[in-house]
Image (cartoon, rainbow over all chains, first blue to last red):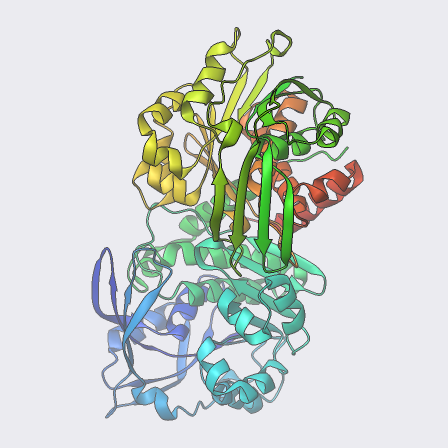
Length: 307
Length: 307
């Protein structure tokens, strides 16, 4: 029951129609760890931070069962920084600043203590870095999940295609699925992507939910309709964290259990957007999570008698 | 087990990235009747057409159990005509031509034989015409469902608000729900609209599914992921037809049964978009419908054990 999480740990500076966050903690691996640690511990974190990353944040993660041996600390450098502003619809945003800093020459090192991890999730990073991690593992994990983004399709498609051949589950949003496949229809896009390596494809549609494709099967999980989406930053990573967390907890990688995992991921993402950054994820209890999962059951459950 | 359908019967001329339809049959009441007649007969149709409407189309509807006594035929005039062109995303379209023709001074007359109908659906029409229909009914139907559109919110909001007070279920799309309520969040929009008259609100989100709101409950039905959406014209009306058809068939207007009705509506809409106009609806059998409903069950069904 071990999970290795690879990704960024960073600072975000977010502006939404509801306010400004100031400089807060962010990064794909941060959100994944906060979400997944509700289901499985320890989490073997692999990332890189600068001397500006606070010890308090590291301690908070450690107290959630996140092992930090694989997190490189470059004391004289700065952590990755992203600033962005969301539009009224909360689906589109402008990037105001991106400073790679320590992420620019990130060379992940998998500690010996992480070897043998059964589950691996690769947050959005350079495909070469993702591949480097896979190659360092002495035993192939039971399941490798990867996230990526449109940027890598533009500047590193060849590398991206190589990593795709090594993973089991790919997570992308609808625009990225279209870009990767060259198909507008998500059904056609999925069919094509499933020939590129991954046996499972999850297409995230933000407030419109997520689709899971496998062979000729498709499953749909809605996003919970919320009064307000306060800050969508990290919702995709939190979804991924809930997804892999549930799988690592249950050790069941069947399609049926992946459906449940996607509902768990959707529930975790619905918490994430309620406050800036990981603010809401810091607060929630197992009871909160169960109550939210019950809302999902109510949201989609129906009876039908076929005649 | 009787259903009265009020709306337009018209000609459409549609251009999509897949081709051009030429002049084909359309109109809200046409799509509703084609969909609902799979579940309940007779259907009491109320509409107005010109001398240009073909007898063959009327005969086809009659053979599906659609009573046409309430369809006025103005021999020397032309039927309502709409021409439009869809963009690549199939969610946005440009109207190329709208000719009201017989619809301009439509005064519906409910035949005596339609009185006592238990279910009434008011397709998108001038709110005054919708109100006129309600007033002609000697006994209030068990359930009144109405559709409307943004245009009436702009030019006839007062009339629209009066009709809203008389109906049980309102059907609008997401943009219309926002416009009617002045709220961006659909949850907040729904709460406000549910104080305006309807006890049930259905928000249609096209390819992103539909939401049903009632008191503090919410239910979500996805749209079926399709290889291609060939022509979305009439999908909303077909959805409405499947919805009211299932309710009229089962005579059960509980929230639980409305969930099922929305799935039935979604299944019917998924057929509609596969061909131009009512082309696909003309072909389908009860077996096709059952197979599609099973796809919906597979699409959203999951197991979860709360700990």
